[in-house]
Length: 418
Ligand SMILES: NC(=O)c1ccc[n+]([C@@H]2O[C@H](COP(=O)([O-])OP(=O)(O)OC[C@H]3O[C@@H](n4cnc5c(N)ncnc54)[C@H](OP(=O)(O)O)[C@@H]3O)[C@@H](O)[C@H]2O)c1
Image (cartoon, rainbow, N blue to C red; front, side):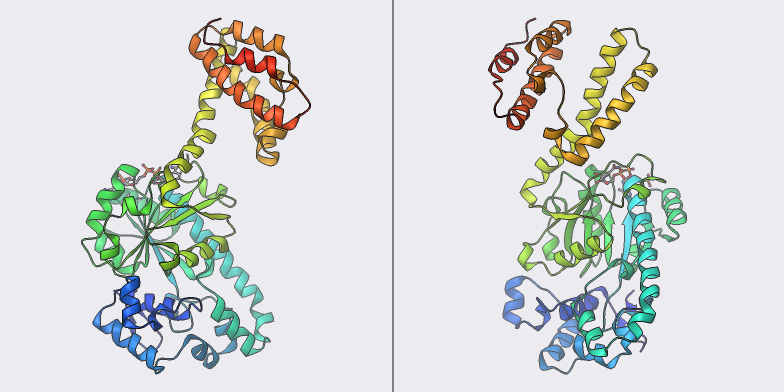
């Protein structure tokens, strides 16, 4: 199923893709010569090639011309637009999720809420913009790309129809019974299935016509090239969009996504990818910080996230165990640690680890460190204490270049014996 403009013309995902090309002042790859398109790997159907030919001859309205002919407020994107509004003056992106679990539900709800916020803002600014000069409105529209208001969460397909229906209810969207069903209605598909299932789901999905679709996964560890093998032959575009966040409650986490960092990476080389920048701008239009990452850095990036998130759980568990050895109940240990944990995390998050550092290493208190090492019962615990303390000694040295931490370093370099 394609998209239909107010004049009744039907646009497939690929046709839409051409418009995205046409309206992007920077690339406009549809206006490239056939050889240049081949070289960059843009593939179109016969029907689309006819449109491209018209565009090259100048008989297809360009984005700017179409905008100038349109009412000023329409051109300025100042009213909420329906899916049918996808015409030469702009585009609308329908988003679907395959995998109605924690990440899929949280992201879908978040995108839907942000779209509503953006539409409300647009309505609010409608009156002011109605007075704006048509030319400046047209030029603003010409420079715009996908924003929060232009995306619609269409719905979910999942392994179990029950999960898909639950997510659809939660996000006020649709539950699809089949992959082709969701594929036909969406331009951007998130494969929010467990990491181990992404490749298999892509393999199945790529058996259908995915031309022009934006296929995304949310794994922190995998690159899009690794996940979407052979995507360049399908006419689809692959991306990994990772929210640097741990979703524990699929109904509540969306509320906490407002300042989450999204890390983006694409399967094509950045300079050849017609959509990477647009996706970045869309994510930024949600109000979130966004960073690009190279495919080869994804595993290290995910390791960084695991250190900051999962390994901290291990450290807190280590601390609670020591408190329980002092007679605290498990519950009391957590109660006792709660304020120090929260305060420390807030401080680190705001000022970074170096400025937040306190304690015997930072104070150069050799005697206390010696006592700590003596109270730890296993070589493994002492090793853990030593390795982390060595790390923070370097932080302390950087903060206090005038101090001599030689003795602390010597103490921490010793092997695991008491
Ligand atoms: N959770 C997080 O904190 C978090 C954070 C950032 C990124 N991510 C990423 O998000 C992705 C999903 O993780 P998650 O935590 O949301 O997992 P999850 O809660 O286990 O949800 C996975 C969903 O995928 C569905 N599914 C599994 N295999 C499928 C298949 N073959 N076809 C269709 N649907 C299938 C499941 O189906 P049914 O329910 O229908 O059985 C489930 O609803 C992963 O790539 C993960 O790395 C997760």
